[in-house]
Image (cartoon, rainbow, N blue to C red; front, side, top):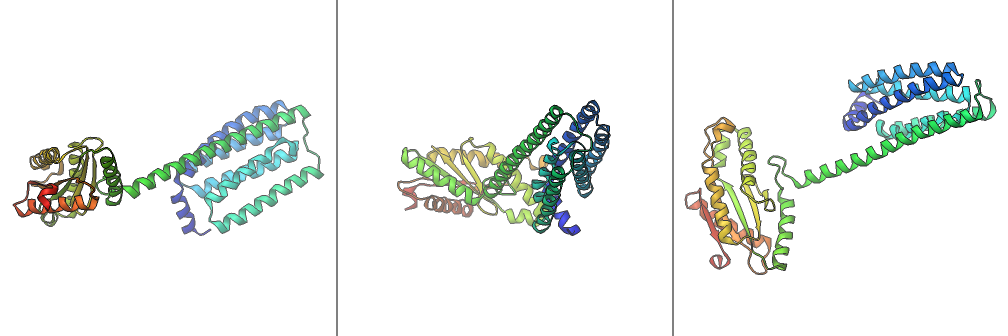
Length: 353
């Protein structure tokens, strides 16, 4: 694998390397336990092999922590491959040390590109079959009692079972977390962290359906920042972005938890107010306009900014679509801006006809 490919894989799978560190801790703990077990069983070679294994896992843990993932992977590979061979040769295939080789199957798929993973998996399969064949044709070098062999096998099986379970739960959590993050990114405006236009449209249409079903009022506010281009021209676009971000937070503070708000355009925001008639919506809009008009921007953005809002308000009429309500709110917004800005205008169904 080229250095560029390896770097890309490492960056794409940071969670995997954190789990690799945890697995190093678990494996080192198991090897410490094995040291005492094999001394008691009269297999000093395997006992002292576990001391070396603990040192290798400690080194790998340190390497993964410093993002030296290639070194950490090589250390783990070497330890498991050699340890599995020594355990199988010294006390027999039935000891179950070969189980640990199976854990490399998912690891290879994660840490390598497809073509290299296929090669590595083929080599792993050949190695595994070779150990199995050796166990069939050659007796163990340091055999232990049948009862002890069964105990070691169950111990190894239990550890591998536990580690596979841990990796399985980690995989489920990672996939679920990634899915939630993708959904969030798909439905959220990256700058203001409010609903984006597409997602807000879906939510608003659902609210309209609910309002019609239960014969409840519903109103919308279309908000535009006055002279926003001038703010960008004078203070720069980064400061303009900060204004949008801070304004989004201020707008959210003026609303109820179940009200919907999203970024509708460059400096436009759309608010959907369920169970709210046009008079109440006008009051909400006016309260919001006054709050923004009187806000001290210097304390937060270190600039003497003057930020005002023009707002158009409309209410859901009989058998109306979302586009129709927003179109009427847009007309009301135009009236606010053409009448001097920094004001609220409402248009109900009768006024707009």
